[in-house]
Length: 166
Image (tube, rainbow, N blue to C red; front, side):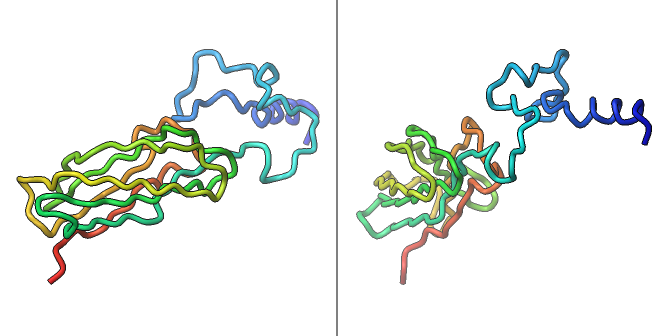
């Protein structure tokens, strides 16, 4: 490879701010050397440490339709599977899904900032939806609006069946 080819290739490889997170190409890319997170020119950065982020997941979701007539007792386990702190106040949206149609039930907020590996159990008792009969699916989506910059955005949803045992 001659030096002219290398210079051209280097200009392509060194540009890390020329594409936005959503894939859009900005009119003027950010100068990465002015951003503390990206100013790593000539560093020997090893994998797994430069772009750490939280990863919000719902590893468990419980729907208890036997708590009281006309109500549901719901427990949502919010967990941070990432490498950075998941901020307090992260939204968890609960929806009732029946025959492929999702209806909002309630939105909850985490109370605590979650360190990597930490969990928080959110318990709530809500009125059972009057227009949807059991059994149905209960869906929990953490960071439902995509506010938190996460490791994986596609693992934020968990579903469980809600029914009366019998």
